[in-house]
Length: 464
Ligand code: HMG
Image 1 (cartoon, rainbow, N blue to C red):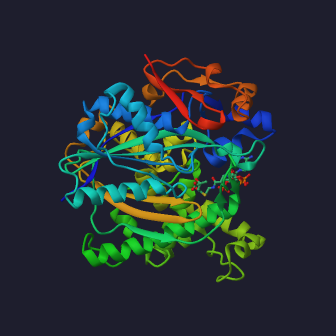
Image 2: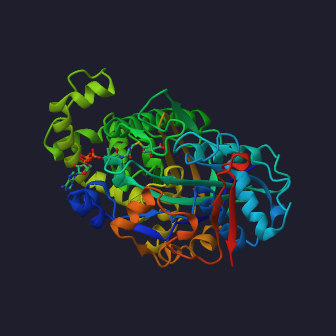
């Protein structure tokens, strides 16, 4: 049985901090954010929003857009790393909110859990729910996989310029209009690591930024190697000599903690793949320098990052490599459209990869590309750490869904925060009743109980 993504919807908070305001306040060069990281605006949650209401707002949108009723949904999974309870799962809050609209008990038989593995857990949730459909357990129903997060770092830390917030929901079924997953080729890599983690009770993560950048690329490459083996074994793709697996992906969507991480990761993967091929000689000639190797090629990430001479040369080599015509063609055709939304919104942790997919569909369609039959590759990464590589093919019904995508109108009337407003929100100085925006037709948080008996209970309302 087939399984895949039938539709996709997003909910992005309307408040944002502009990269130029942020850079000025922190004494940074705005070009570092805009060109160095690819960050122009970062979406920020209001005082009456949390990851559960972002998720519920995205779910309501996809249900209304598709005229779905609760009986059509067999499973609702929420993947997040912004959980606020160690026991109660976030899908229960989301169902509570949806039942305010659809009626008490209307989701009574909708199974689901909250999943966690930093930014990769949404991909595991998609895989598990696709397999639920493939196993014919769905009884004709669809699954909703919601990825929802608030990416928040310590004030003044280098992570602070890579924040963002939002939710993406995907409707999965056995006759997907958008994308059917390729069967039996999903591949993973995993390693116990401390690149980025958030111990219990701490609101912001502990991050080793440059270490995390390199680990991300290594883990995705390992998952890609495993994917390649599966693709060859299953015969999904016929590889000719001189081909790389990336030649057989029309689009490549990467996890985007900031949009330039996608560029960095693509360059790393392409370099790794092309190095083995006859075309590499031609590329080296065009670059005009040998590819540098670390002093200790079998060393650790720390030893490579500490090898200053190598890091400088490698940086220079990468810059020249990414300017070659052959690489530029790959970048423009396969990745560039997926980066547009990330630049405007920032890091959504679990949701970043899927916001990128959504962005790629909209902006490639606008270019006039016929998306039918195109193979889309996904490179998912979660700190701590695990990567997942999988793929799917765009289906005949795609146009019905993609023609209505309009990121700008979905972002709506955004409000640019002053730095003081941003800092008050960041430091949790405002209570829900002091929210900056009074939104309509949305779920909002109204109260979090503090008394001993009901501490942590959250109350939400749907603002008519
Ligand atoms: P940093 O170390 O301060 O920045 O913070 P940098 O020095 O690496 O500079 C960034 C880029 O800007 C570089 O470009 C500079 O050259 C350039 P590159 O060399 O990489 O091409 N640059 C400039 N360009 C123009 N004009 C200038 C200028 N100055 C510098 N004046 C870092 C960057 C990402 C490390 C930091 O923001 C951070 O720690 N972020 C949080 C961690 C993160 O996002 N890691 C990404 C990989 S791990 C991951 O994706 C998982 C994650 O999503 C969590 C999860 O899984 O749950 C984070």
